[in-house]
Structure formats: structure tokens, C-alpha cells
Amino acid sequence: MKDTNDNFFDRVYEVAKLIPYGRVTSYGAIAKYLGAARSARMVGWAMNASGKQEDVPAHRVVNRKGILTGKHHFDGTNLMQQLLENEDVEVIDNQIQNFEKLFWDPMEEL
Image 1 (cartoon, rainbow, N blue to C red):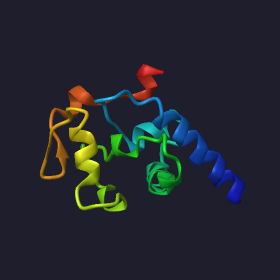
Image 2 (image 1 turned 135 degrees about the vertical axis):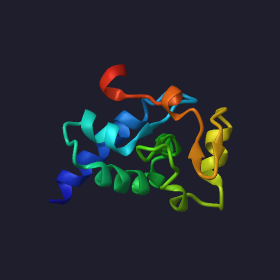
Image 3 (image 1 turned 30 degrees about the vertical axis):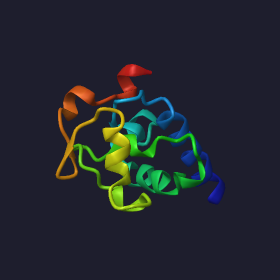
Image 4 (image 1 turned 135 degrees about the horizontal axis):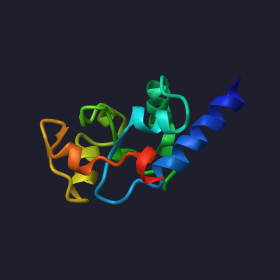
């Protein structure tokens, strides 16, 4: 069973690495792209475990409403928000502003 998760996590990381600078996507959008539409939570687990992967921009993956639900998995109090703001993504009260405009949908973009 572990191999299946590792494989899924690796596939999640491959998609996450393609999210352009200054854009964001959701756990569900990645899950849907991978053919596992009901596995948004598992994508979240993959993002939580991505700390060992330096080149995975986990800060660009948020919930379907643009809320930084994974922020407590980052070191520091506001690291996820700071990383996004460094890419000119505006965040107010843990929510990405202009989410629809910044949203990157792998189903359309890949």
C-alpha cells in the first residue's frame, strides 16, 4: 500500500512543480487532473509531506476558496503567506485576493 501512496505523492509533486510563479491552484484541481477527483485531502497530505522536496512549491497550493489552509505546516508563523507575497500574490486574512484571476487549472493548462 505504501508504494501506491508514494507514487501518488510523486505525481502530485510533478504537477505542483509546474505551477507558474505568481499563480496558485487547489488541492482538488491537482486531484482531478490526476484522475482522482475525490482525493483532494490526499493531495493535502502530499503537500504536508513535501518539506523533504526542496523544489515543490507547496505554498502555491490552497483550498478551493483560495484560503491558506496548509499554512500551519510551514515553518514560521506566516511563511506560506510570505512566500506567496514574494510572488506578488496578495493575501488578506489568510485568503488569496483575485483568486479566480491567479488560479492555475492543470486540466486547462497542461
